Length: 256
Ligand SMILES: [Ca+2]
Ligand SMILES: [Ca+2]
Ligand SMILES: [Ca+2]
Image (cartoon, rainbow, N blue to C red; front, side):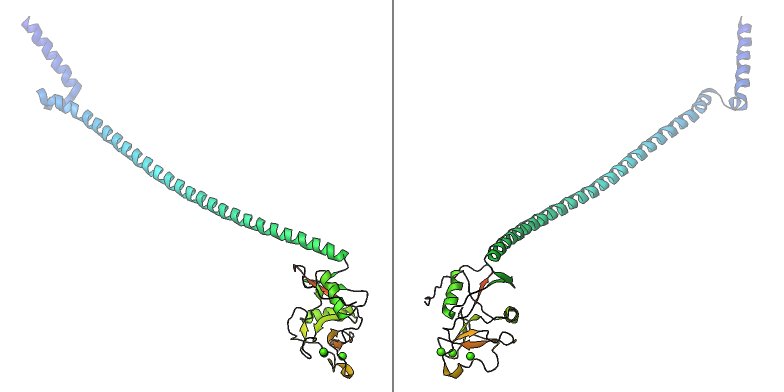
């Protein structure tokens, strides 16, 4: 029986040697078992470390991606804020423009209304004022009275443009100029002193010592057309109403 056991043990040893070759033969006991396990552990550790590194890399990539997206989000948010701010400013500008346009429209409506009214009354518009040229003749004082009743006054010729307008009328008319208060000191009907004048040659002259205290355009064919005449002469006249001026309240005593 013991012989049979020994024979079987020998056969097993031979099989083991055939399976593991020389390396198996160079080791024995516990050392042989540790040598067979170590490569698997190393591989396992290598895989675990690699997996850990991959996880760290994934986390780093995720953080980087989030930071990049956050940066883009912030930039887009700033652009949106700037656009909204620009939009608000443009809205304010548009509201101011609309208000200005509304005021201009109302002003134009008023002007058109004034033009309609004064045109129907026989007035003409020139350079900021309306003018009325009479078809009848009156004394200088009654001429002025007529103008005042119309919310205007006799024409004041204090600009070159007005003198040109007067010249284009080609008529002898009263103008709002007088020296009745102080002989030789000419004033306009609004009390302003005469500065630039367009007297004709040798005028004013108080012709043949008559009291000529009112201005007219006797020499209307000339550029310098003014003349002094007795205020009681009967002549046509021209009223002037400045745009936006209120009705005049001064009422002279009418001559009959
Ligand atoms: Ca006088
Ligand atoms: Ca005089
Ligand atoms: Ca004269």
